[in-house]
Image (cartoon, rainbow, N blue to C red; front, side, top):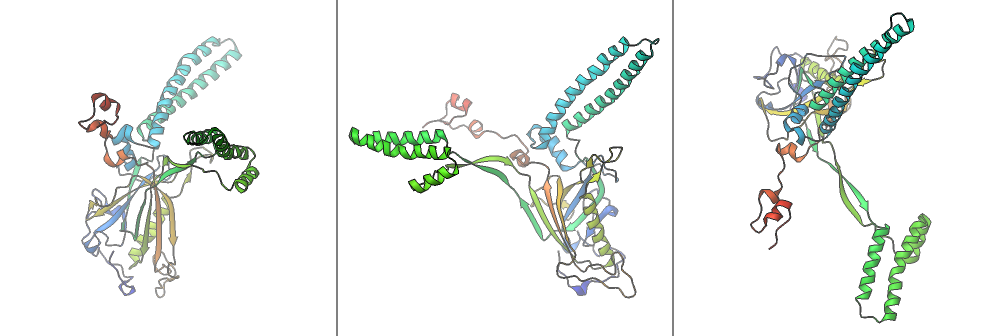
Length: 421
């Protein structure tokens, strides 16, 4: 973003764009695009990022949608069984739910009618009551079965997610911070102090003594001396913390934890973007306020409506982020899948509070009282676990089977073992 000074700031809004704005995102209605600065995408501001918003299906505040599929759903459909994370879990749950709905449907359509027919005697008030209750129960169960089956199919296809992208779009200059965090979770596992480990170590000590040139008496003395720390260590472990303290002070040694690093699980990628807003006109100040309000609104959850009495909440909206240069995706910055807005940080006085004052005008939105500078920090978390398939888009091939060395036999090629020389 080009630098400018406070002398560049004018509160007489221009009648039109200051540069030749083209469509910031192909197929986007520019009237629904909120942008900062006002001339982002033109001239010296050809680099920018686009934030699309995906509203939840059950939101009580629906907005017009664009029909574009959110990135995470598109990736799951493209990769199929190679996709990782929640898509695999929900697909499995969907299969179970679909089979369960079939079983419930059998009970509803076969068992309940038989019970109703058994009591179906119009001459008995009791039987009529039972029959009516059975039919009512059957109707409720049928409806629940239909909903269960529908939800199960949505789970299997991934469409249970926030699947509707709204038409409103946010376009911002390339942020001052573009941080991608790729993390994996590794755990430390200690083998030291375990009975099997102590036995193996003691056995090795015994072998070393037997391989020496000592006489029988010397071997017996040395074996006793070598085995005593292992025995004392086992006793100290059984005695708890006090015993281990006594062992360390008495023997002058401590147990080797024999730590190993083992892979535990992947972590969702996180992204940090920092922006500094210096609105140069009242119109640009209004855009800044609208951008902040949109992000704040869609980052918040909502209490579910439709008679749930506040028992459920609808999660916040999800976001798709992309980077552009002159109307085209910038391939030099890695693609990001659908995210949640994990943190929204706003500082209305990054360099000490200072606001615009327009003579003879009371405090107004984007006018008098508007901060000269606002710092906004966005931290997103990806909703899709990235695996090698996510980056390559194809199934991984074993190098031992794909390109076998000439020295490998057919049997070694089939079981994946390395060939000898």
